[in-house]
Image (tube, rainbow, N blue to C red; front, side, top):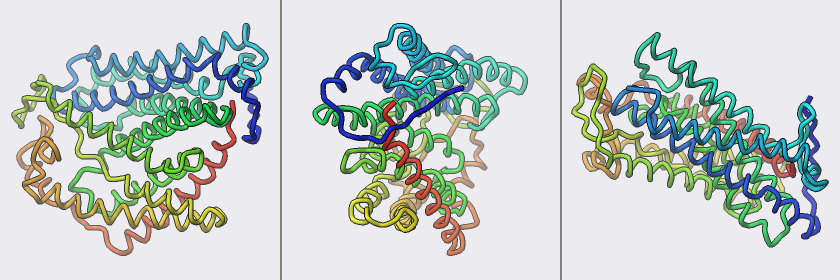
Length: 391
């Protein structure tokens, strides 16, 4: 059974810290790169489905996802074997035990994530052969894959976090930056999973704000509390938006035509996900509040953070959604408000040019506020735990 010890993050001697870090620094960077590869592959795969259809398992996007999972899983497995049988005392002290083997906590999470991702591949292939094309992101095999992907990104987050927490002061900034990059990928994972509930014509509805309030405050607050940087929530939100926008703009330049029917839209290039939701504003609000109200108890701080998130999120996203839906100036490559999948019927497109009903009202926002406060409170609790992770 796994045993885990989480000592308090206290200053440590620089020489032992460097010795511990030098032994496996390559692994931390490899897993962080794998997490980025997985998330890029997921975005690319969704774009492939929206533009071409699922013509084969062996698409470039699928290969990137699985290869990235293998990099994270196999490198973590190697670290576990090396630490167990040939690891130094310092390496073993910076690891946790599982079934007699020893490795950093993040490595174990990556191993299990890799197993889940590999298991999802034949399941997904069978699902498509049995049921044909799926037009939903959240199907049973995709859910297993999503859990594996979440584990890979979480593993990267834990590995970079442990490095940050046990590094000497001179080396801590680079791992702190790597940690918020992994945090941004985690936020991206949340955002992609909520895609079906975040379509631009849904962004005046109660469900959109409820789900956003459940997911994003937790992620941003937890990342911020675990970081040693001054603006970590802002940085993580910026990483999320930069990666999403870069993929949105670049993939639109790739030629593509549908291979499955029915074909309603004249697709000539890859169709990408819509403009990402604006999280930089809420990230700034969270960081400012954490600095100015850091002496508040967590219960009071959670109320302030939840309210700040929802207020800034609505203030930015509500008018921006109206711009995307109603303004012809948004229907271009930059804002991507005409990103219709090839199987979008004319009737669907016509309905999607208007906001879905019912529109969120005061009662809906009151519920979203409760969700945001609860989400922020959980983020504070998890972030407090993360601030002590050293293994």
